Image 1 (cartoon, rainbow, N blue to C red):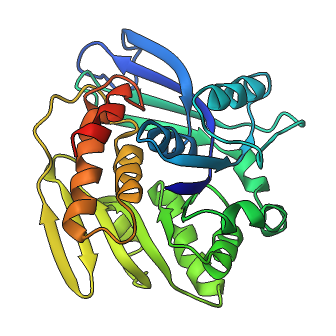
Image 2: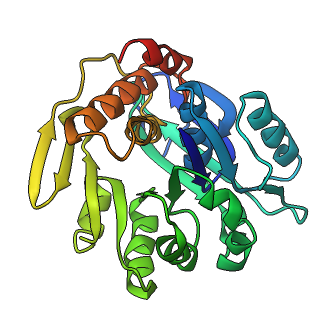
Length: 285
């Protein structure tokens, strides 16, 4: 399937405590630098699943920006409609995990994605229209999400990203003319923030070890999380949405949930935000 992904591509700095995390103190552990961003991670997962992916983003982070862009090319992710920021705008996510791989906290500096304006997207409308599905993350401004809601002729999937960014989805719907889109993915905390946003056909609500709830047509479908050994939860939600998108908008609730949960399991069992094992799912599901 040909998919256009619009959102963040950034440098991930992940710190993992070697023992029980002690707030307010220096904790021994490990620190890794990798390429991330909700949009980029989703695109990476989709590429591993065999989809034709075009990532539409602004690469920031100073000297890191061209390196991330080249890494995307090497992964087979199209970036012909993206650009590298020339003014040093940042695109970083710093996270701290405890010894069990659970997120303790994080800080996101996504200045670069604030420059993904409606006018910027309009200039790339051909890439969006040529796709079979469009994915957007809420790192981009609300007005840009609204533009996508109004201009996407293909099914639009929106990732709420975080509690802080989820409010952008509500604002986008409020200022859009169309006011409806195909699917929303959020976690339980984000869902509380935007519970009043009910204009999507499907709503995927993740709850970590408690599993996934899908809402459609006034009904709720609950799916348990798959058995796994968690090494890091970073990227689990991105992988889940990639699996859902890969299953296609015509997939049943059950099939889309199955793809999403299988991809999420691969991700959380890996120390990295994206697991190469997701590639193997092409032949298993």
